[in-house]
Image (cartoon, rainbow, N blue to C red):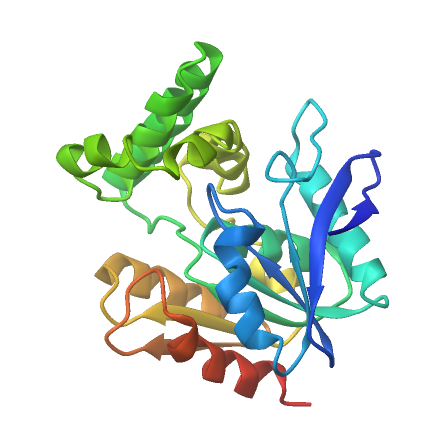
Length: 263
C-alpha cells in the first residue's frame, strides 16, 4: 500500500498496478479500492494503474470540513505521483468528480466518464435529488449510518426486501463504515441544487473525453450522457450494448484500452 499527501495534509492510500502510461481509477459512491480493483487489474495489463481509496474510505484519511475541492486536490496529488500527467477513468459519481477535476485544470491526458448520474432537466428528478441531499445529511447527523446506506440503496432501485437481506451480509459493515462519504458524493453531484449537469462545466475540459453509458440503463441516463458528450469540446459517446450501470471488466476493458491507448 502506497500513500500520497494531499494539499490539506490528508493521507491518500493507493495501489500501483501494471506498467505503461498512467491511468487513475476513481470509484463512485460507497466504493473503495477493493471495489474498483477488478477494473484496475484488467487495465494493468496495458497501463500503470493507480487505484486509490477516496478520502474517508479504506486506508485513506479524512479532514473536516469536506469540500469537493479537497477531493480534486487528492487527484492532483495522485497525478503528480504518476509523473505529472495521467489519464483518468471515473465511474458514476466518481466520473462527476473526474469531470470536475479536469475542468479545474488538472493535467488529465484523456478522460473517461462512465455514467455520471446527472439528472436531466426534469422537475420531479430534481426534487428527488434535493430530498436525498437533505435525507442523507439528516440520517448521518443522527448517527444512523446503516439507514443512510439503506436509503442510498433504495434510491438506486434496490427493493426494501433486498436491502433487509443485505444488512445480514458479511460485507455490510464495510459499507456502513463508509456511510459518511455518501454526503461527499452528494456534494460532488450537487444534489442540493437538483443534481443536474452544471451547464458551463463540460466546455472547460480540454482533454479528449469518452462518455460511456449502458444500452440497458434508463433512457434518461442515455439522454443526459449524450448531452454531456456533445457539450465537451473533444467528447464522444459510446453505448455499451446490453449493459447497465455496472459493467464487467471483460466487457469494459477493451473499450477503455482502445480509447486510452490511442496516442
